[in-house]
Amino acid sequence: MRNVFVVLGFIASILAVILAVTPLFKIAYIPSIAALVFGLIAFYFAKQKQLPRKSIQLIFLLTIIALSLSTYKSVFTIAEVGNTEELIQKENESELDALEELEDIEIDQ
Image (cartoon, rainbow, N blue to C red; front, side):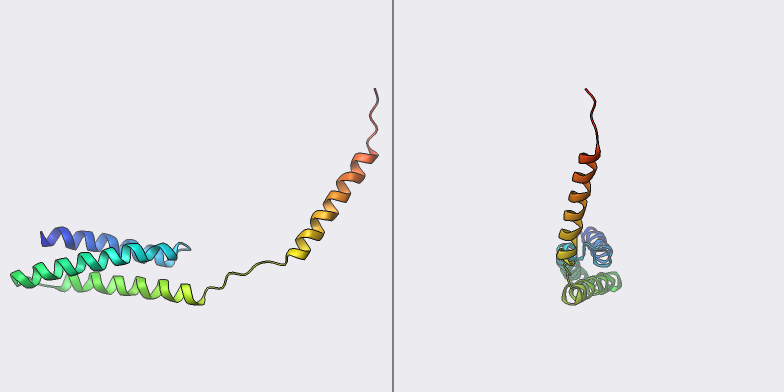
């Protein structure tokens, strides 16, 4: 039973680290919490049967790394909105250019 939770903990913690370094870092909290839960359950079984806990410590380490990266990116990432005045001006210019081109076209019937 312990091995199942260790494997699930590893999968969740590795997924959390991968998501934490990508632009999808806000989703990394979900597998991080799952990895913590699986790690705690595996730790309980290991403590009960006096089994080694190194793999469980690695799960916790990977989860802490993922949580810290996600939190860092959440705090220090600034969403910048571009200058919309330039976009509106370019749109108006392209509209005027299109109208001029349409006026220059002669249609023979």
